[in-house]
Length: 200
Image (tube, helix red, strand yellow):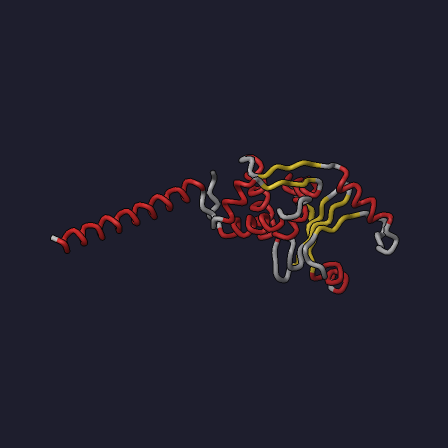
């Protein structure tokens, strides 16, 4: 099994393990909890994906690195069959439809889903719009965000065990167990030797 030694990746995996208790774990929600905190959001429209951040305490380079790192981790987990995903391409469309039918939200002709883990994001951006930077990411990295909104996932038991065992692989656990039994055997042998010498 692949090892994950990076502290940030381990933090993401612990969060994934915690969220996996929900049988309807959505990858879009996972992305939001991992990197869309503290004045960050992604707005998904039918035709574009807009990234938001507060430029006074964040920048595009850090945001893109965080998104790249998390996307890379998710794709590695899928490739290694530690994360099983199943998609429903209508999830995002249904959410956009729900928003468009909610007349309490002003849309100014735009129908968009705001993905964020910052409960106060909408209030903050209305109060200080000039503090926030928004941009369209000019690479295919942005495509993963709506894709994840449409995906549910199942975390394989091997990954849960790996996380629960403090990021030790089965091989490492077997090695630790072997060392432990070897030490016990050595102590018993040493005590047997001391007893034999004492009786002699």
